[in-house]
Length: 332
Ligand code: TYM
Image (cartoon, rainbow, N blue to C red; front, top):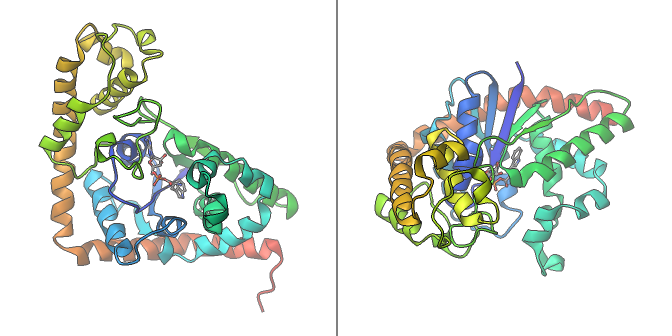
């Protein structure tokens, strides 16, 4: 069976983009794969973070993933910093990856912006650790949103160079799984920007913890154009806001753009937004209440993560030890 690995950062509350672009697919893939899902707290400290809240945010996110349907018994759910193999292999990959490769990463350019001299060196080498996350388990399939595609390509470059330099075929090729009609959910305020935890405006995103009223209001205020919905997907071209809302609807309904437009084509946005808000609330409300229930017993969530980390380490430790041997380290 092919092994799946994916991760999510505990920086702020997860939003509808995380859910539709990633977590929902993680849940579905559990049916016929061995899966590891990781709250990547090591990645979370590459940007400024609050050391007083990181642990709680890590636990909250784990609870939210379980509430979404991640099964921590049949599969493995853990936080990254608890499994040292990530850092061990991450260092090796930092010495395999080339400056030129990392210089091409668009996410680094976006996040660093004009402040390049002042960001942490960890933000620059971030993709090396991400490659280590996946390859420490010999995982071959990685379900992610569209924004992570370039990082997966880099991980494949790193594994190819490792294999070449150390005369081995030890690390397998990784296949990104970018699935469904909402692999890139856009901001509700600007159809050209992706929905993001770091957007200054909370109106730009739907958080998995938002209540029904807040969700309805955010969708009502979402930016749109003045035309009614088209009856065919071709009519969504050059209408990014309309395309985004239709994509969200399609993902939540388990259909595609065509299916949504068959039902709603010709309607104005007022009516469509009412249906969309009802659908989002119907799908998210049970997740929010289950998350709250789980967090009523934080010790239980911590025990799940501890058990996950032990099972993850049991897989990763021998793989990373072998990678260290291939690099040439003495193990006296
Ligand atoms: P992160 O925490 O930014 O996002 C978690 C997942 O959500 C997806 N995503 C989106 N999908 C659709 N539309 C959006 N607007 C949107 N925003 C986020 C992301 O693509 C991601 O799948 N670098 C990763 C975490 C990571 C990782 C890994 C992923 C660390 N190591 C190893 C896979 C494998 C990140 O920052 O995700």
